Image 1 (cartoon, helix red, strand yellow):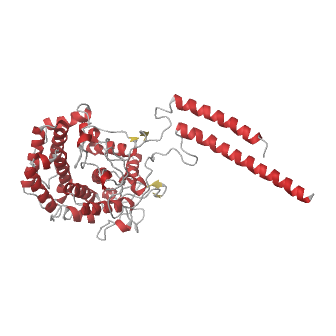
Image 2: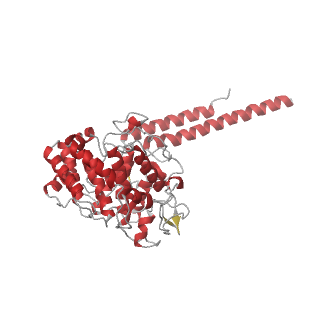
Length: 458
């Protein structure tokens, strides 16, 4: 009797456990079906402003070739073959772009009404975007005249005397000239000038300027400064390394960018000079972009660019307005685009630091404005989001016209655009078919659950 009783209790308890397990499975199905079909966030994850679309882990760069993500049409899997042709775009990607629309019209308008020279380094004018427009149009149309004009501007820049007192002017302009030379395929268009340019460029990125924020070279500025000087230097350094085929220089630049985005001290040069600003979340582990979740006095500092936000004052709320935070991301945006085309995943670094800095700017009423708006289409493409304020004519100190060229490659591909505000009434909504399917699956799940719970145990 005692044995039978124990057996009976065991049967009843195991049956209850099975019914409980079935009930838990049913609840999991009922939660999962609407979430999967309708795109709702899982329990415990509110519809936040920042939409996470990159699934890659925040893994430090390896010592060998960059890690391939096979994210572009001309990627070839793991290994060096995954690197994309072209610093900005490949020939095939360029030829797939339209020759009409507001983005293209902005390029042609610049060609028809250029800023004009002198085309030289260590200046802070907009003449470098004249060259970029010529290179983009020349490459897309295979126009010998436009390519020739871009080539002539490049030669003029090389021959012109530089102002050694303004390294920042060079940092902003040189990256544009390098990419323009690559766009027109200078090596084929004018092999003699290309050979001269390569020799000149290898020396230029190591030339020490005497002034302009402390002077220094392209390379030393990238190593030393985490502010907008360093970000422009980083973009120039990457463009130069790619043009010259210098893998060692590319890896060195990549590692510094990784340290900048994550704050990882192993990837932070020993000679780096931090300003000690209290906009930093952690003075013992300073970063180019504050870590996710950082807050002070109830205010989010998640995504702040401390070394440039400090230019208008130390921590206060509401934060002071400064254009330097946008100047810093001029260099970051172009650098990350170029690195992504080489198989890296900079958009995921630092818990998607590039996205978080943009989020903070919008949240505090300091989104990109005027020429800085060229960054918007690049961030949109990288994360599959929609941002207000795009301007197809936007060009900043170093680059522009991204409304036309951003999108075909260079960034992780998302599964579609997302509303940046996370608002539930932002327009659109789940398709009718998805809603119908969700309802059918929900009813099926309910019926299955009732049957499973009432079914005799065996």
